[in-house]
Length: 262
Image (cartoon, rainbow, N blue to C red):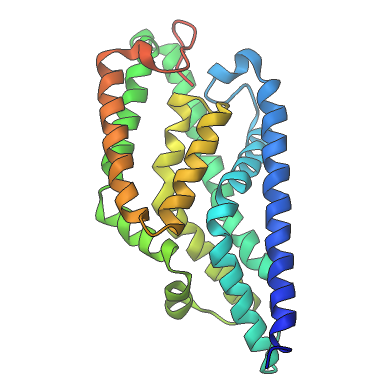
């Protein structure tokens, strides 16, 4: 009885090892990029064009989201392996992963357009530029409040239960794998998008912050106390956001006068 399970264990070990290597490589790339940013770290677009920004964004998403997405990816691979043993047509797990990343790529395009627009607006309207840190504080408060919304918890439930997602969202074939990857990516987006938004006011190249957000996302989705952790994150973000609104100088990254904050 144990023999049939060995190929599955080897396949899952291979997928897990590949995800670990990709995640580690992404963190190394982020570390190298962060050291070379210099004054560009205070710019919302980091002085990049859309193509370069999107490439860096996808590396960041791989570094931060693969650990939390690994249980869902492994569950998808396990179900596919079971179908293969029953004589079904195999579908590559990487189709699912690619569709998942495509969702975050689309978000990266939206983030770049919003960041470029905010930079132009901040430079054109002195009041907005000089109050940039307070807008950052408002983002922090909004992120904290969102942690408590029904939409957040609906998405978090889907991310915390890969089996439930498979039972309710399974689609056969390559097209089905792509649909499932997009669907799971949207649930992850609904769960985490404002946790990524706080990177803009707090410092996109603050590696300690990136690591902390990665751990929080992983804990929310994977650990038994994840639901309760959402409430703690909400309290911290709202309290810190209000403090920034009152005293903008406490943001860790202060931009040159007249520009929007990173």
